[in-house]
Amino acid sequence: MHRVFLEMDGNLLRRPIFGCETVENISFVYENDVCQNFTKGSALIYRTHLFLREYQYNPFLDTDIGLVTQCSADRIQLLDELSRRWPGTISIAVYLTDAEVQSFIDFIQSSDVLRNRKNIAYHIVYKDGEFYPINYLRNIAISQISTPYIFQLDIDFLPQIDLYEKLMGYIVKLNITQSDKKAVIVPAFETQRYRFTFPASKDELIRYLNSGILYTFRYHVWAKGHASTNYSFWKTANEPYEISWEPDFEPYIVVPKSSPLYDERFIGFGWNKVSYITHLTALGYKYIVLPDAFIIHRPHAPSLDIGKFRTDVKYRR
Image (cartoon, rainbow, N blue to C red; front, side, top):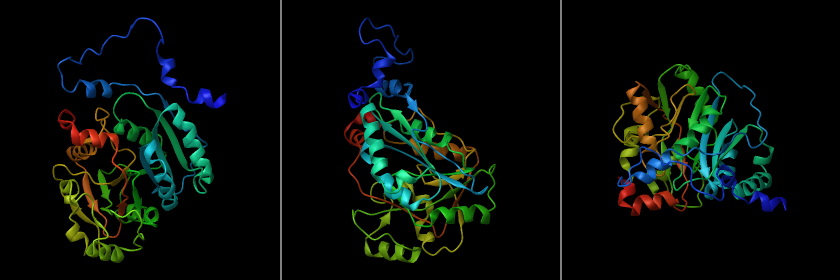
């Protein structure tokens, strides 16, 4: 009986099940507007359950960095390996139905690493509407973390094994304070192989690049997204280097917790992170690339929103 009620849609309790419609249409949505579904979607107020499980934050250093991420039910399994490589605080917003929440709890309990971690904050955003509210999810994860710095990462990436400690070291080396307008860039790479040995060092990563095991992230689909990182220079760099912003840039960054939140009007796939980096640039942020840090994207099936983006002309507008 308990599971029966768990599988019910909690959104049913937010509105009358029977009777006449009493909610007025959103005044700024026009019937002939090709973007009306996006406009309505961006105006949704999501049921949100903060701190699903016990969470403890023990201040480590004034340079402590928390990893913030988000996912839907089809990416949950990626959290296990990510948490093995990031011993520090993690704040994750997960987009689920009521029924999927219990399955998520079961997954945590079955994981040798997750069930024993108290420094992972799980936040549930309940499914509603047509599109994945990516920037709302990001903002939930960011706003509920206590570390002075945050590493913004998508869940389908894996960091090098010592990245947590390395990033804190660079906060000190670069003398970055919590009020500085500086964003530290961790270069992103990808593999098309579901099984491969994660490179233990930059030298090994470069060998993987030369042999075709790894590639710079999205080089064949969206090279502009990470072109400003200047991978050619990075290969031989021994010290952090500053780069200039270029249009469509969307790196993975470490910034002070005081940095702006994401624009929640962006939902679904496309431009959600580009707009954020453009905002930081307009505010005067400087970008510094680390010479010996890296993350690697893992292959997986495309999301529903990417499928819509690729096939729907209106979506791409």
